[in-house]
Amino acid sequence: MKIVYVDGEFLPWNKAVIPVDDLAVIRGYAVCDIMSTFRGTPYFLDEHIQRLMDSAVKIGITLPWQAADIKKIVSQVLDKNPDLSEANIRIIITGGSSPDFFTPSRAPRLIVLVTDIPGLPEEWYSRGVKVITHYEERANPEAKVTDYVPAAMALKKAKKAGATEAIYISSDNLAMEATTSNLFAFIGNTLVTPATGVLKGITRKAVLGLAKDMFAVEERPLPLSELLNAREVFITGTNKGVVPVVQIDDTVIGKGKPGGKTKALIEALDRHANAFSSGNNKG
Image (cartoon, rainbow, N blue to C red):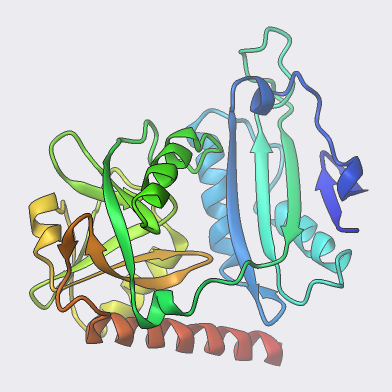
């Protein structure tokens, strides 16, 4: 049975609980982050922990931990789950117990759990995916919070339409991000991604770093009309990497198959991951 870290204790999965007066339960007041291991080593661990802590600060959670404390706990949880050759690592910081069910306490809770990495269809990468558009604006886009109700509803809508993801469109018709992904488009030969009003994904950051050595890159507003006329579109995320988008609603993107520039970025990210693993294996 998997071992979970909850509020200072390492517990079997079926014994891991938090009190019902925790604001994560009562109000959905919590932040989270997720990362994956690559050949046994957490990929972008420092970056994910920093984003987690930044998210907590942005919503007013006072942190009693340093990044090094959380990093150590992640390592301990992995060590206590040796049967997982590769794992998703989820870290959650809750608002803690609240006597009035509203005011954040100064004793937040830290949860770290690991699960198997789900397999994704190979055809996502070889053939591309369909996405839909969905008018939605996240209340606090720069904080990765646990409130995924809008995302769950948008994904339900996407599934009904035979799509993999839903792209959030703002009230002024700007394409922003997807429910659990960042959004990129090749407008002409320039790679464009929204600059503000989105969660700055760790994979997004890696792709931008790689792309700047390969293409012209712009972080700026991306109108929906421009997105629908893009030569290539793709989405990125921790678990999915770079996924080509070949259809948005009823509009076919480019030639209706993954484009050469997107494929080049998929390969570049793969090389980056392999270099990361090799570097860690040397140390």
